[in-house]
Every structure is written in structure tokens, then in C-alpha cells.
Image 1: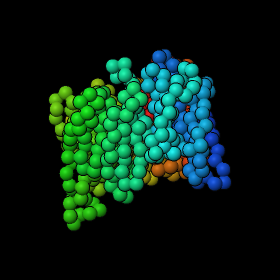
Image 2 (image 1 turned 180 degrees about the vertical axis):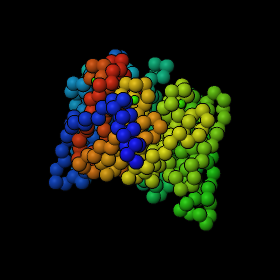
Image 3 (image 1 turned 90 degrees about the vertical axis):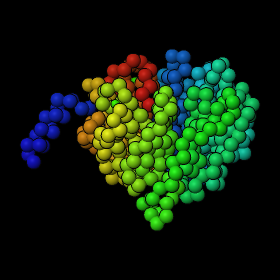
Image 4 (image 1 turned 135 degrees about the vertical axis):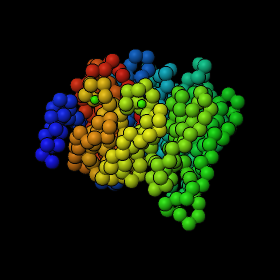
Length: 403
Ligand SMILES: [Ca+2]
Ligand SMILES: [Ca+2]
Ligand SMILES: [Ca+2]
């Protein structure tokens, strides 16, 4: 026991682990009527500038807005009389699209700092994606209604498509459609589809089928899709019964990894954590487990148990500068974990507040000084925490800009 303790201390000294020193960057206070107040940040690069855009969410009152920081300095802000969820995105033309819970959508010219377009959807805006494809602007707002998710596609600010996707009643995490390449990817219960912007065709990619589940083990239950993650070469589809479907774009193949039916996969990301130039699969389980799976062999690299449920994926980021990534996550009890890329606990930090059931970390050099910042999302008291690290990066590097 003593020996292993000594070895751990020695290894910590050799690795020179710096503790993350989080400070309150912003505190948007609620009032006596608000149950909770949250800040949703996203980091974008437009030309050579870094924009940190924050959506303000006040539960229980009609209040919200956006705040934009450019290279670390406050640049622009706009108050709304409705809350903002994840409903904002900034495209490479400098157009910021933001939609609120009352269903209004605005387009801002970020250079001129003014509204250039508005639209009333009539639905609660949950998420917005915008992208420039072949010099044409696309906007995909995602709305939440009772029992379904609706997404629309705007091309040059004219609506060209609308689709209602039924959500499973009682499932609190509807899968948000993802906009990637020329396609919008979305899930409806067991099935995963793509919508092609050019042909406007919908194609089914996977049926995750039914599965003998841990909750409904008498009869097979729909193996509901709980998360989708899309990158250049691979699409991951996770389910609430522990399956991960790996769709490889170049080979047109689908492989399945099963973690066991009692494992509800809440969020997946891809990041090469073992330096073999193949992105690995990192994710969180609802039961509080952080896991990593080798992207090449599909073997489990590690599992780590936190004390509370996890809904968002961990952050993989080298904060020590030794070219080996650390895995960082926070649980709802306010414990922040820093792990090695092999899943060994380096440090556990306690925050004196409860976090939401949707908490996670982002990383980027938001002030372009060549040192990386780590952003902590999930405070229910309206705080955004930022830790400045000594890790040197190319100025303006974004490692993870949004959830
Ligand atoms: Ca790898
Ligand atoms: Ca490291
Ligand atoms: Ca910095």
C-alpha cells in the first residue's frame, strides 16, 4: 500500500500535473423567480478571430440573450425576452443565427453587429445549425414540441424543407439532428436517417432493431438511439441499450460494439487518445461511467466510474503539454475528474455548487494568447467557469468548441 502510494506521488511529480484553477468568467444572476440560470457557450473561428458566443437561459422567467466575445474581449450583446438554449450558431460568413424559446429566430451580421433577418417559427428553438455550402447559406433550426422534434432547412433564408421526428415519450434527451457535409442526419426511435440537401432525399442508414433490455426484459424493447456523432470518416450511433454502431463512410460498412444492455449511452465523441492516429471512441453512460474504446481494434481502453449520472461526453485534451491527452469530466455533484489517457485518476476537484444534469467542458484559446483555456459548462447558478492553462497552442486553436 505504502509502496504504491509512493509511486503515485513520484509519478505525479514527474508528470508535473498542473491543477486546473477555475475562476468565474461570467455570472448572469437570476432573481427570486428563477429556478436555475444557465450559460451555454460555443467557440467559433471566423477568419482569424475567435468568437466565444454565450446563450443565456433563465428558467421560469421570460429573459435571455446572447453575449459575444471576440478574442477574449466583450464585443456584442443582445437581450431577448425569452431564454436561449443551444439555439445559436455562427457560420464562416460571420452570420450568427440565434433562436429563442418563444420561437423567434434572428440573423446577426457579426461584423456590423446588427440584425439582418428575422423569422417566427412558432416553436421552442432547441438548436440551430448554419453552414455555407457552395457560397449558399443554409440554416437548420431544430424545434422541440410535445413528443416530437421538428427540424427545418432554410436555403438563402427561404424554407425548403420541414420534417417532424417523433420522440419517445419520457425520453428527456431527444436526439438533435446534426448538419454535416451536405446532409442533415437525424434519428427517429430505432432508425437513423440522412437528408440530402441537394436531392432532398431521405435515406435510412441503420435500424438498431429491438433488444432485450434491462428495463423491459420480458419483451424486446426498441433499441432507441440516444446519441449521434459525426466526423469526416466515421459516424457513431449510440443507443440506450448499450450498442454503438460505427458507420464508416469510405468503406460503407457498419460495425456494432455492444457494451451490455444495462448501459445507456448518453454522449459519444471521437478523439485519438492513444496517439496511433486513429480516432478513438469516448463516451459517457447514464450510470456515471466514462469509457474509451480503441478506434482501430474496438477493444475497451478504459472505464472510469464517477459518483453521479453523466449526460455529456468527456473532454480529451492535453493540458500538461506532454503530448498525452488528459480526460476531463464533471459530475452533477460538482466533482471534476482529471484522468490519464489510460483512465487513471490524476486529480479530483470539488466545486461548491450543484451542476446540471448536462455538464461538460470545452477547450480553446479564446483570447488568442497562445495558451489554452478550459471552459466548464453546467452551473445552475448562471456561472461560466474558465481555467487558464500553461499549455502552449497555436494561437486561436479550438480543441472542442461545442457540445
Ligand atoms: Ca487511437
Ligand atoms: Ca498530458
Ligand atoms: Ca488563451
